[in-house]
Length: 124
Image 1 (cartoon, rainbow, N blue to C red):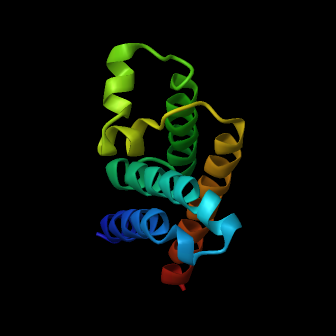
Image 2 (image 1 turned 120 degrees about the vertical axis):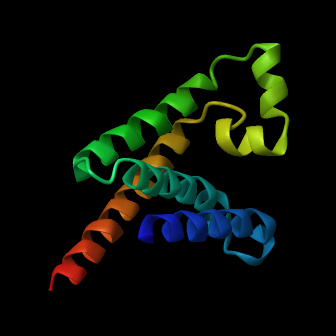
Image 3 (image 1 turned 45 degrees about the vertical axis):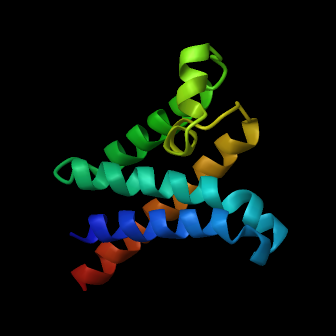
């Protein structure tokens, strides 16, 4: 249940970071969406694979996030039509950017630290 809540909160924060970007500091507005997207991916894998190890979720999160980013090098009409939709753009992105790999790394790292800290807190 905790991962579902984390996913929902992260999605809401990500959508808010895009909708209200003009109210945020420029650095946060430029980076928050991708960082939060990667956090949501991590929480999603933790939810789906709760019986698997912590590091499995980290590995799959990086594989999925980086795979989506590298898929943006492929620019066929059919996939660009999907990317042209709101949901398609949120999931698949639009164009390959190296900086997105850094943002995903930061997001997955933050989510993993939050997850581990939460688990440690509950074990006390």
